[in-house]
Amino acid sequence: MAVAATHVGGGIADHVHPEPQGFIRRYVFSIDHKIIGIQYLITGFIFLVLAGLLAEVIRTQLMNANGGFVSNNTYNEVYSIHGSAMVWLVVIPLMTGAFGNFVMPLQLGARDVAFPWLNMISFWMFPVAGLMLFSSFLMGAPVAGWTEYPPMSLQGEAGTSMWCAAIFLVGISSTLTGMNFMVTILKMRAPGMTLTRMPLFVWAQLATAPLSMVATTALAGALAALFMERQFGVPFFDPTKGGSPLLWQHMFWFYSHPAVYIMILPAFGMISEILPTFARKPIFGYKMIAFSSVTIALAGFMVWAHHMFTSGLAPFMQLPFMLLTFVIAVPTGVKIFSWITTLWGGKIHFTSAMLFAIGFVVLFALGGITGIFLASVPTDLHLHGTYFVVAHFHYVLVGGSLMGIFAGFYYWFPKMSGRMMNEALGKWHFWLFVAGFNGTFLPMHWLGFEGMPRRVAVYDPQFQFWNRVESVSSYVMTIAILLFFVNILISLRRGKKAGPNPWKARTLEWQIPSPPHYYNFKHVPTVYGLPYDFSEPLPYRGLDDELNDAPAPVPAGAH
Image (tube, rainbow, N blue to C red; front, top):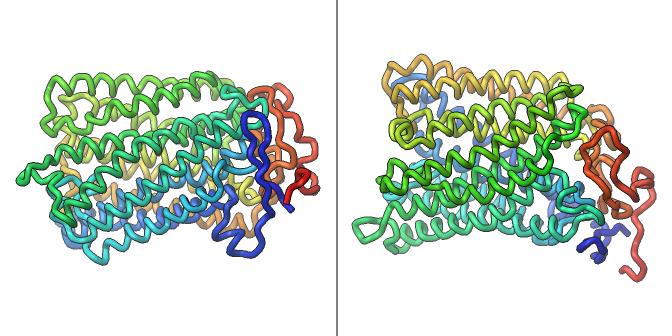
């Protein structure tokens, strides 16, 4: 019999249950956080492929100034579902659901999350919501973009109501996951693991959890109101009936700006694990990185209206939101300078994970710089509806979040599978992806300055050359991602055996077998230091027999 245990405040309250038998119980309706993390990973990658194919439809349409690949209405549907799927079905579930579930309890020294059954339910809401979102194509998909501003979203086909229901369901899943993670981190740490001894990826998840819990309620309210107005005529947003379209914008961006940090904070945590491991140096400024994550999470709620400078927001309201947006760049800058200092003088090993981590730092920093442009009211008034915004958004969420996902996957794949990824294919993936990414999104900056509007199916022929460069470059990105999936399949079948700790890393997940046992740890370890000082012995006790095959102990009286 295997054991799952919950340890609270340094003690252990045992929740004993046998390891499930049979394919359905073990791999479909599993309550094991590691299996659930892999389920999120597989499902998120499937939606990444689907959303990526929609992106290629967009780029193929824009190869020619007069379009012609799809109709204008179909184009509007495609870019609306592409944006919605990438945000709610790819980046957020992969960041929190996949990596958070698999890695965070192991790094805490826990045997599972606080509420395993709730964890399973949270996952199964996610693919159902994804099927609902993509099925909206069958009834007329939404056409107002991933933001679905009224009054346009009030006039759309029935698929817009399906969009509301799908995103609402994803929000419930995200809220439950955030609650589960917060309780797990605060109550299930191994003895001796104080808050200031936690790995930085755990800190990132701790900062993200309340964002998911609090911000999503604002979006849920907005989605419910839009759904009720569409289906039952309740006049929330229709100005002809006394409603306000700006109400939707306030509610939507009160969620969606914090959502940017839901999508990027876990990536910050991943980078903070990868860089010291492959630089063989302690992370620089551990507490500053940890506390800056909390600062970003709190400040994220105070800047939503910088998305609304062109909406008629009163000038006396524009100035504080502009200044607060400048201020929120400070804790992010703390992280970037800490990462650079960590690399300085290190013995750097350029693995695939390290390349993606360094690429993340560079591309996300560029995206942050362009964000300063848009935080300035006069500049934003000129650039708001242009391709400059598309460029900025993708440098943050593709150059940032997706690069972080790739870095984390290459780093933790040996722990998940017990096998190593092919490093040669990984490096081809990196260089092709970076080249294709910059070729796709860098020219959008100057197209935006020249006035090319976003969300258009046809455009002025003067912009055609750079749009063709972008489209061809996007195909290179697609080839790179295809290579990534080929690498996964090859590595799963023929990859070199990884062993427990191929990277010689120091966090707890690397001190147990790869893949981990069902019960994670035979004995809950005791922690007495930080995991980032490579010149010191491992700061753990109780790990001496983790790598032998003896089963986990069953507490006396367990059934």
